[in-house]
Length: 497
Image (cartoon, rainbow, N blue to C red; front, side, top):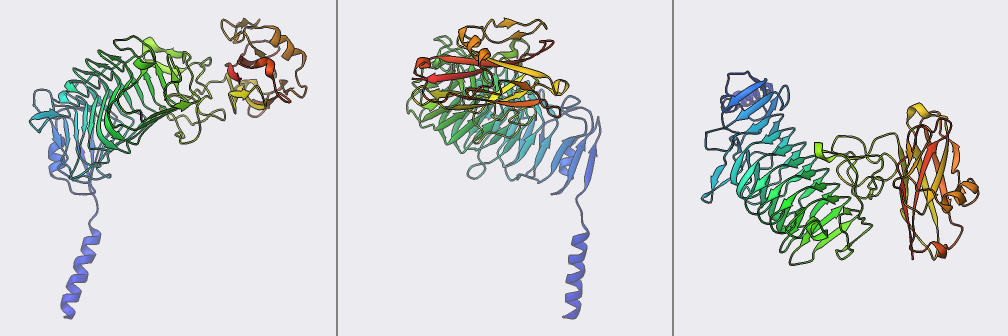
C-alpha cells in the first residue's frame, strides 16, 4: 500500500514536469507535420515563406502563429480542392490561428456543398491578425463559421477578408448556427453570385460586430455588404458600410425574415442597389420590422426606420478612391455617436473617444483640429446648455482662440489669412456671436488653449427658450488667432421646434 502511494506520487510529480513545447517550422517545411506532432498547449511558430498545403488543426488546443506577420507568411492551398485551414470542431478558445495570409482554398464538403474556401471554422477557436484573400467556395468564399454539436462561438479579430468569391452566398463570410464575436475587421472586394457579397448571416444568436469596415463588396442578389436572415439579437456597433453593391436590394445591408438587429454609431454611405442610393439601398428592411438604428449616418435617411439621433450627411472620408475611409477633420460624423456600448478603441487601435463623445463609423478621428460637444440638439421651447471641447494640438499650447457660429452652413467656409478655411459661412449670427463672446450666452468663446494639453472648453447657454431659432441648424467652429493658420472641424447644433 505504501509502495503504491509512492508510485502514484512519483507519477503525479512527473506529470507536473511536463511543459508545453514550442515547435518551429521553416520555409520548405510542413505546418501540417508540426500540427500532427504537437500536443495540447503547444505553440507552433511558422517562419516567413509560402507553404503550399492545406492544414487541419485536428481538434487540438494549440497556438499556430507566424513569426513575421501575414505579409511574409502565406498558406496556399491552390489546386488541393480543400479549405486552406480547417478547424475540426473540438478546438476551443485557446486554439489560435494568428498572422498568416490564407489563400487558394476551395472549401470543405458539407451537406453535399462546399463551405469555407479560406477557413472552415466549426469550433470556438480564435482567428486573429490574418489576411484571407483569393479563396472561393459555394458558401463562404473566405470563411465559413458553422456549428459544433450545437452552436459555435468563435472570436475573429483584426482580419482582412478580401477578394474572395462564393458561387452561391457569402462571398467574404458565411455564418450559420454560429455566434462569432467580430472586431476590427475589414471585409472588402468580395463577391457572391446570390446573397451576401461581404457577409451572409443565418440562424445566429448574440452575434456582435464592432469597428468593422465593410466596403466594395458585391452580391448578384440581395445584401451587397451584408445579408441577415433568422439572426437574433445582433449588435453592430461602430461599423462602416460603404460602396457595396447589390444586383437586387440592400446594397449596404439586407435584413430578412426573423432578424433582430441593433445598429449603433454606424455609417451607411454610397451603397447601391437596383433602386439607386436611397435609404433602402443603405439599409433594406424586409418582412419583420425588428431593426433599431441609433446614432448612425445613413444616406437618404427619412426617419421611417426606428431609431434616434441619426443623420444624413456626407461623412467626408479621407480618400475613398484609395480605400482610405478615415474621417477628415470636416466630417459631420465626429463626436456624433454615443459612448454607451461603444468600443474603447477604433479599428486602428486608437483610443475612443478623443473628444468626449465617440465618432460614428469604424474610425475615430485623431487629428489636431478637433472640436467636440456633449449634445447636438436643443429644444427651442426650453433652450439649454451645450458644452464644447476644444483641442488644438501640442504645438499650439497657449495660443488664443476665437469660436464663432453660423446659421448659413459650413461650406465653402471662410478663408483665413494663414491659408486655412474656417468651416463656417459667416452671416449675421456670426457677427452676433463675435460681438457677445464671453458673455453669459457665449461663455469662453474667446480665450487661450492650455499650455500642457492645448485644450479649452466653452459653453453655450441660451438662458431660456429660443423660439426664433426653431427648426434652424447652427454650426460652430474655432480658429487660432495671430497667424490664423488653424481651424477646427465644425460642430452641428440642431434647434428642434
